[in-house]
Amino acid sequence: MADRNEPGRGGAAADDGVFGVAPAGLAAVVTALWLGLVVLYAAFAPEAAAALLTGGGIAGGVVTVLGVAMPVVLIWVVAAIARAARELRVEAMRLQAALDAMRGETGDRPAVELRALAGQVDARLQELLAAQRRAEKALAAVAAHQS
Image 1 (cartoon, rainbow, N blue to C red):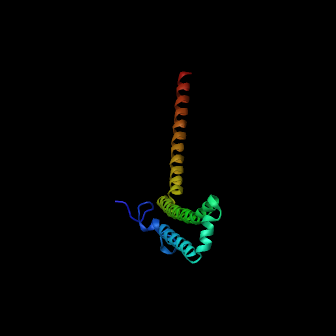
Image 2 (image 1 turned 180 degrees about the vertical axis):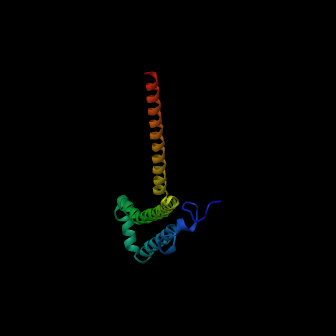
Image 3 (image 1 turned 60 degrees about the vertical axis):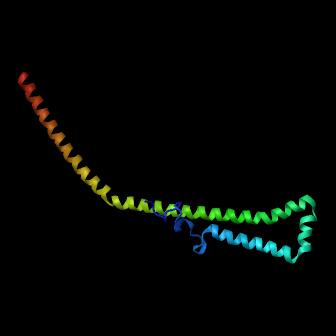
């Protein structure tokens, strides 16, 4: 069964953001705050809000909508980036732990194994040299016997 604290599994580790608040939750609060400020502006300065909506014609309306919508879009883009950064950070920590575990498994074994292997190679070379000397003696005996 998967651990709920793994990234991408819906656990708390993937959602913790600034001050332990999920980026999406923080983005929702900031978006509500922004839209609340826009409504307050329209409520307490109705002449200015009306001038913004009707004063510039279609271009003024587009600029007003962009002026209200773009901060909301930017807030959610930042939230998505914050979540992706958090997931990457958790993944990097997981990979680092796996790498440390792999290093810890091997420890000093490679150096010890190389020394043992060098000893085995040395012993095998000595056996081969002894066999070569015996073969040379046998060939010399055969050559002497034939002559």
